Image (cartoon, rainbow, N blue to C red; front, top):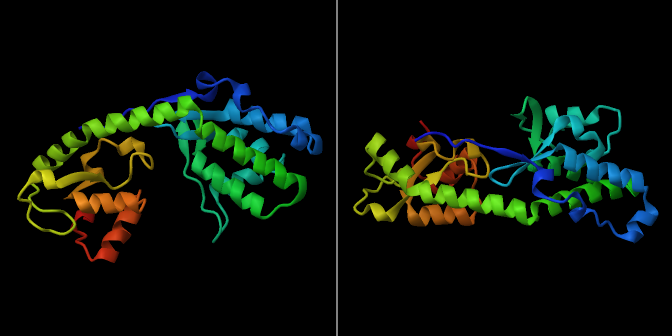
Length: 242
């Protein structure tokens, strides 16, 4: 089972830039139109949409979005974070340029909004709202849904392959014997959205009872670390972690 090949699309290939260009007239009257345009332009020029529907923003173009001007502060926020408040961003290289995920961009914007007031805060809020509108674009939602459907269609193959390769005959969490293989599922450790590069990697998953997988999904567990903590909480086996 090979890793999934990821593709990225320029946001401008998927949407008319003016489809989110509808800042209220009241807001425009209070703020500088040029500054609003610079935020919109920076988002469109520097955003790529992964085939799984997750936006990634080029580091070189983030200053206008997070309103740091020529200070270079955005690079410190991205590469170092703020101890105890903002984690450093995970960097993804796309076409030879550093990018951060939309999730990291939101974290930076939230941290800036919390420490600013007046017009700067309003510009930051506009940037955040525009980002959420990008997520809500039909073309972006379609990409995410099609990607997830593709993975779900291959989940049974992942299950069969992991069971075959590692000769699994017990639930990897409870260690209870498997009498009926329809009672277990392949559950990703790093979820498809969290780490799409490993969506088809049998080592990025475990064979567990359906009800446990459903409980993890309800609780929004998306990463290896969260899965490990979940098993500690439930007193489940950690042998799967090596």
